[in-house]
Length: 154
Image 1 (tube, rainbow, N blue to C red):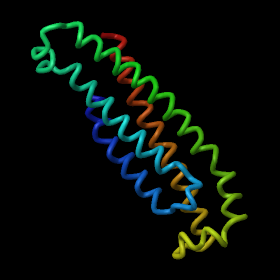
Image 2 (tube, helix red, strand yellow):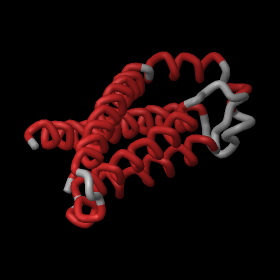
Image 3 (cartoon, rainbow, N blue to C red):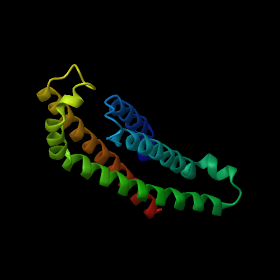
Image 4 (tube, rainbow, N blue to C red):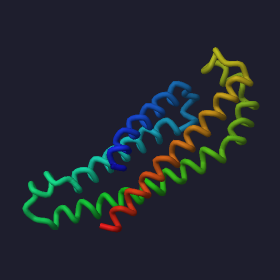
């Protein structure tokens, strides 16, 4: 069930990456590329977990060992994704103050990329987006943790 939920949430991560890419500031921020990569990674992990646990996949495979190998691969992939998303979430939640200072110092240059925002509006928008990204990453982390603990109990 968690894998299906992550399969739905993964395209949202990718979409958030494309939304972040619209404020490209001289390739300074790599968050947009990281979000797209993590979204694709979560999508494939969830898909592999669904296939490794599905009855149809088990009947197609004659050798049960291949199914166990896929489950181990899925578990370690989930662990790596969990660690990366945790680092991303902590970074997004703690980076806010530094990014707001950066915006204050470089507002004249940033204004060219976001002409519809005032300084205060842009800072409020960036702060809310960082909190949203952090909370979203922690939500995916929780579902990955549930998925990993389920795999361990099997």
